[in-house]
Amino acid sequence: MRWIWIDRFLEFRRGELARTVKQLSLAEDLFAHHFPDYPVMPATLLLEGLAQTGGILVGEVNDFREKVILAKITKARFQREALAGEAVVFETTVQYVRPEGACVAGRVLIDDVLIGEAEITFAHLDQSRSQQVFGDRNFVFSGELKTLLESVRPS
Image (tube, one colour):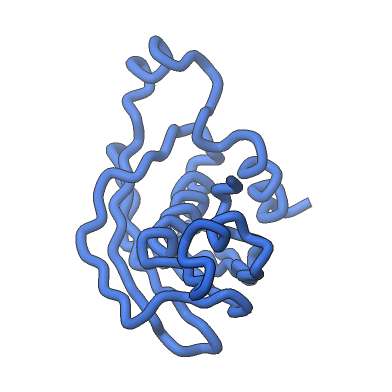
């Protein structure tokens, strides 16, 4: 199953705001198992899309040198789930960035209508401990996600 819940960026302002979109189609793996007769993207996966969008925004602040991981979801509220065929927009705004981590406010929209919001806190892994355990490889920003990240960077 593909776990990248972002198709492309709509807007990106370094250290400030990121807006991404995920076009949901019946071809998504999740719909085969998550209520085949009622294909929905549940709130947990909407939160993951927000976390991916916010994590990229926070990671880019330090040129992806930090290993940024989700630490906690302070609050989250959803009015409904997203349905196959809808375009889901994830919007995150930086609340703060500190050496130990960062926080973003996130909104989920469909057709410019707010369907959910959350506050997400990220942690930066301790550099020396992270180096011992994982080496130089940045396991957070790699593979398919790294390719998506390159679309954000100016040429």
